Amino acid sequence: MAKRASLIDLAEAAGVSLATIDRALNGRETVSPATRARILAVAQRIGHPAALRLAHDLAAKSAPREVRLGVVLHKQGQDFYKAFANELQSAIAQVQNVRAKLVLEFSPSQSPSDMAATLRSMAGRCDVVAGTGVNHPEVTAAAEDLRAQGIRVFSLLSDFAQGVRVGYLGLNNLKVGRTAGWITALGAKQPGKLLVFVGGHRFHGHELREAGYRGYLREVAPHLEVLDTVVNLETRQLTYEATLDALNKHANLRGIFVSGGGVEGALAALRELRAPGDMVFVAPVLTPDTRQGLAEGLVTLVTETPLDKLCRELFSRMIDVATGSGEVSDLGQIFFRPDIHLAESI
Image (cartoon, rainbow, N blue to C red; front, side, top):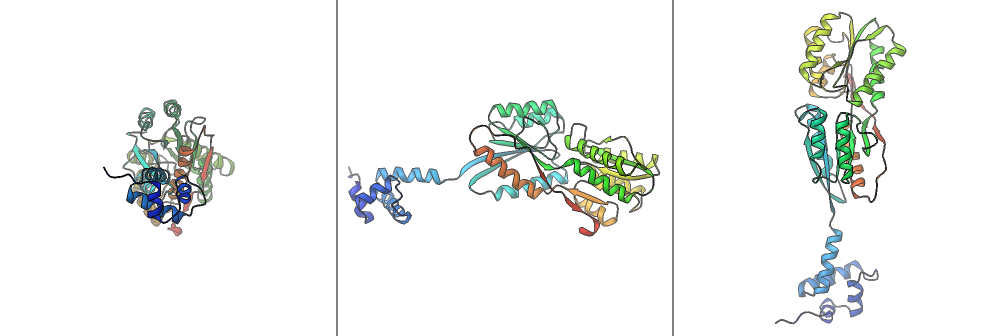
């Protein structure tokens, strides 16, 4: 049987004293990193068990921790959510100091039950979760279930599960609505009607945008009447049909504000029945279609979420929560300034 290498053998092979070997193996500060590295390299070559154990421990300590970051989005086929997914992939690649793994899922629909089920499916696969969702008791219950398992939830774009979720990241939606009202009042000089779309009444962010829009116009433009809000489920077809109906019924339609998805449908209807510059049109996202609308003069203003900034901040906050110890306090609402696009800025 081959003789096992001793500490004396290790000291001789490394060209240092036994005292230096002792200090290196016990992690004392008096040994330089270069000397420690030489001792460990020799220990691995000659097979000294104590030093090999130390090398293994040091390697384990120096390896970055894996943190699993779950994100649930809607509307996998929409341009906005495609762009959101791409920004998430880009941001995860830039994370440092931990091995960040993105677990990305899309809810089958906007229904509260689908969103709640998708959130619950992240349990066991993620250390912390973020999602776009409606503000509904079923979604809140799912966030509560995850929290009970030590998994905290962030809300994105439209707040939900207040008091349960750990934080919200997105725009100040009330201000977005008031901004839409401001540009509408500025551009629509003649009395007339206005049309506003929301994805659904359970989208907290859309409710705030609608409230801000109506509130501003009540204050400064009483000559403009906001029609009953239309729920479009963020779909192109419903938005298209509702816009055509409003254009045919109201010759004095002066403006349209789409607070969420489905903007392509409204633009398609406008292209059929109205000339560029005929009304004020405010969109929530810069897509190929709204960019073309700006160039044509059909779109007046785009108030867009800066997804690159949001994704970087989101992962930073999620990692802090996942790697922290103890109960995490409510981070509140983390607002971003919208990217404002006009025809002359694209």
